[in-house]
Image 1 (cartoon, helix red, strand yellow):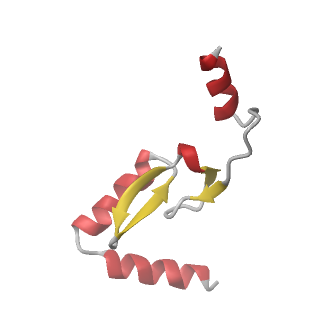
Image 2 (cartoon, helix red, strand yellow; image 1 turned 90 degrees about the vertical axis):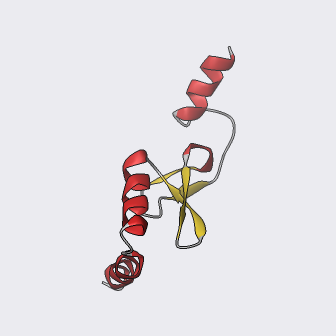
Length: 78
């Protein structure tokens, strides 16, 4: 029964109305309990999948954080 309830919660049919948050990288929304967290630019950031997690790790590993954040800011201003 617990597995079935977890499945219902996963697809949004459960009783809980968990808050939805946006992925730091792509903006996709999901319940907070489904998000992964990655340290990026000194803070834990929520990401929706391993792809977004890998992108942020790669950006930081290659010292491209400032350029990435500048591009995000420029994109949000459009």
